[in-house]
Image (cartoon, rainbow, N blue to C red; front, side, top):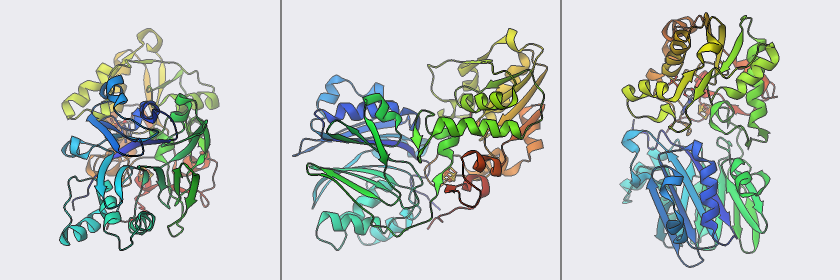
Amino acid sequence: MTMFGLREKCGIAGVFGYPEAANLVYLCLYALQHRGQESAGIASTDGRDIYIKKEMGLVAEIFNEEKLSRLKGFAAIGHNRYSTTGESTLKNAQPLVVNFKYGSLAIAHNGNLVNAHTIRKELEETGSIFQSTMDTEVIVHLIARSKYSNFRDSLNDALTKIKGAFSIVMLKENELIGIRDPWGIRPLALGRLKNAYVIASETCAFDLIGAEYVRDIKPGEVISINEKGVESWFPFEEQELKHCIFEYIYFSRPDSIVFGKEVYEIRFNFGRQLARESDTEADMVIPVPDSGIVAALGFSRESGIPFELGLIRNHYIGRTFIEPSESIRHFGVKIKLNPVRELIKGKRVIVIDDSIVRGTTSRKIIKMIRAAGAKEVHMKISSPPITHPCFYGIDTPTRRELIASSHTVEEIRKYTTADSVQYLSLEGMIKATGYTEKEHPFCLACFTGKYPLKFQ
Ligand code: AMP
Ligand code: SF4
């Protein structure tokens, strides 16, 4: 089955009521760069027209003063996108801008629809022509073809037809709209900067521009902001909450408040819980930078084993994970990290990372630390084994490529060449978030295979 936009993970932002709104959105996207490094775009409005600039690459590389100055107006939305090859073309970069019966509309989306394929087929059979493979375009077609004759009813009509993970920002000539799916899978927060409103995937974007975090946009909520103020409504049927726990494990920045809690605190607790579940004796705890740092601090605090920065990261290269080919990915770990030899030599070392995907990173790092003279290398992971791919907007490879889908922990230990490998237990992870196993509001499908929403 073709799944459109399968591997999208993104950052989105919107501003309403600020002169040169595009500049603020640019800064928000800069703070959200970790959510997507493939392309970025901003659409703005001055109340008459919608202006758009999008390109492949990083936010800071794409935009300059001159390009930003052409994005005129008091309202703007923006998007950072990451997706794997095949799909990575400018055609699929967002925001998407259309002109239709309701005027101009720009839209940007984080997540994946599970029924985009079915809807798209239906729409194509009845004459719709698509220009991209983005789920976002499906939403636009549904609005355009709704039986209702005004924008708001058509929007609500379209929204009730889509299923999946969707945090969305939309821009009309005089309106900014933020939408979150009723399962609350991906985050979306509302902030304020003087008289302006800001919407962003994560609150770290507010911090950069000096905006105040007001609250999360609620699961199933549509927020409309125009010159009269803020309106909110809930067009969806209520659903069981399924916040993506991976936002806490890896994806969100530790300084963001996501799903009502600071990511740092939860990630620290994952490390603490991992230590409670561990009986390994060691001389030091070393994080894989940057992904393992906060959990390693928690582990060290709980176990009393000293925390050391035994691996030094070169900050001026991208994440190895996004390198396109296997050969470069192998090479990438070496460019990125170097061990501190004198510190490690002759020592029993615990290495902490947030997750193992294919196993490539762990294997390289363990070999590197052993080559630097470590006596023992124990790998500890602050989440359970990832056995299933994500269909809701986090980029994970296919099931076959996920090492834990077909290998036991002992086999993973052998592959990574570690003296031991330990994962955080599923129950321990949930407990560390402060919820009981029964009452937790999380999607755990990549660890359990229990997908809350099926592909249609
Ligand atoms: P791997 O070498 O494939 O096992 O990748 C493991 C590394 O990828 C870990 O250091 C994680 O922090 C990182 N990681 C986990 N999930 C993702 C993701 N969805 N996108 C990018 N990197 C990831
Ligand atoms: Fe998040 Fe995993 Fe669920 Fe995807 S499958 S939404 S990564 S918890």
